[in-house]
Image (cartoon, rainbow, N blue to C red; front, side, top):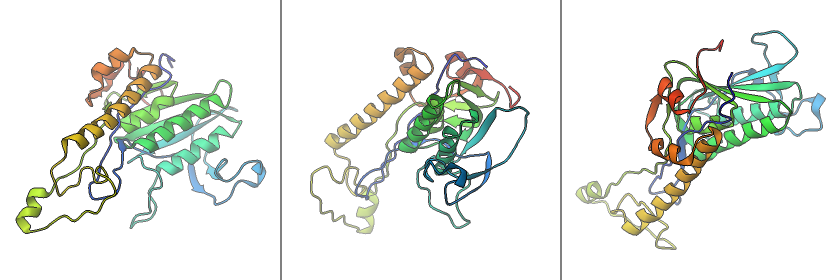
Length: 281
């Protein structure tokens, strides 16, 4: 595989939910993990030098291949969020926390030579995506010659692309949709509806900007400007990460960092991925 780009980056999606005390910033992306079946509640007895969070106990499952080098496949599926709650049908499969724990385990396992991040996601939270990116960087730096390969499925956009930034090489399927580099804060405004049904907003706040994007009143221009500054700062970080990871000029990335998505071939032409292929690639 080519090592042209050491990292790839996705777009940031920031969501502001009015009516809550603080707005949340999210990035569109997807999460998951693959090379394990069960997670133990304590650290492995053979690795007492590490805490449970440093060296999570997983049951390893051999998937394919021969040789002494161990390569860990970690699927990244669904919404990228930290501390996901269990749903009505049980805990989420392939949660971000599980993926992070898997990377952590691989980082402290001297037998692991590489990680294959198997990505199929449209985005998620900015902090969760950045945490994944950082964890993959730590894995690469923790052992000489270690590699991270990102393998894109149907979608690897926004936060999912961001999370893949720690990869030494990115392989996209011929039908992959990727990119979506950009930042978004979005909410709904119910002022007109509330007036029609006779609902009044009562907000007691400690400062003029504590209820920014209050859904029961028109957005204030000065508060919109403040939030635009937040978006711009996050966007600049995103662009810098992509430029550095993909060995591209910042000016080049800025031209395509408007939230648009790309086919695999276009992404290859732009330098956002290294190869187009399949699992055997």
